Amino acid sequence: MIETTNLEEPQRRVVERLTRTSPDTIDYRVTVSDEDEWTGPWTALMPMAAIEGPIFEYACHEGNYALGNMLAGKRAEEAEAR
Image: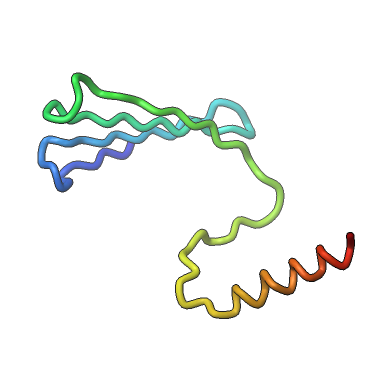
């Protein structure tokens, strides 16, 4: 369980739970409560399936000036294949 408090709204509370439901699946469940904002807590559930291959960092590409060239090159390859 991951509990986050001390947010911008002091009464807001976020609780995250990660539960393995099968050898290849983890359920990510997040519950948000803020009595000043909502009539009751709300919960979202997202099952996450295992993937093949390496996991790459998901990061912002701001300042990655080569990204435009990489995308343009790939689009050119796709156009030639048609």
